[in-house]
Length: 220
Image (cartoon, rainbow, N blue to C red; front, side, top):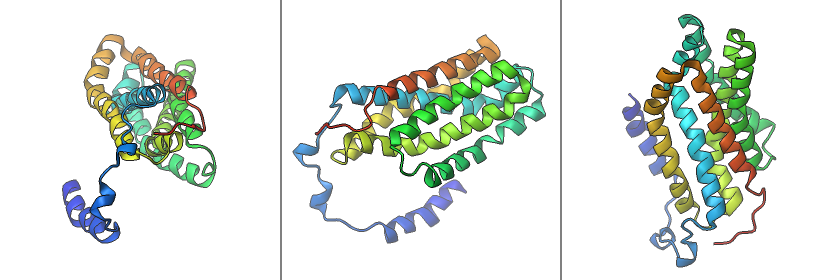
C-alpha cells in the first residue's frame, strides 16, 4: 500500500506540481562544490544528526520493550508508545504556529534536549512518567525531522545545499539503520539502563548543536 501511494499519488503530484527547470540549472557550478567545508561546522552537524537519528531508530524499534524492562505492564507500554506519533505531529504544529520566527538552531537544540529530559523524569518518577517520556521523545523527534532540512540551510546558506544535506544525511541514515540491532544488544545487556545511552547520545547531539553559531558568515 505504501509503495502504491508513492506511485499513484506521489509520482503524479511531482510531475504536475514541481516546475521544470533548464538542464543548465541542474548542473552544479564549481563555486557550489562545498564538500565538508567548513569542516568544523559540517562535522558538528553530522555528529548531531547521527546521534539523534540513532536514538530515533532505537526508540522506534524498542520503546515498548524498554518500558517493560523497567517494570511497566505490556498494555501500559503499548499505550505510552502510541503517544509518540501524536506528539510528533503536535510538535510540528507548535513550531509552525509558535516558533516559526525562531532560528532553526533553536528548534534543533530543543529537539535534542527533550529525549534526555524525558529520560531524567522517567528515572526520577518511574512508571507514571512513561507517557511523559513518550510525549517528550515524540515531540523532539517531530522537531528533528524539520531541523534536518532547515538547519543546514540556516547555517550554511543555499549554495551547495543539496550536496550538504546529502553528506550530512549519510552518517545519520547509517546510524538510524544500525540502531535497532545495536540498541537491542544494549537492552539485553543493560535492561532499562540502556536509556542512559540514548539520553547521553541526545545530550551529545545538543552539545554539538550548541557549538554552531546561529548566524554563520561562511561562504562556499
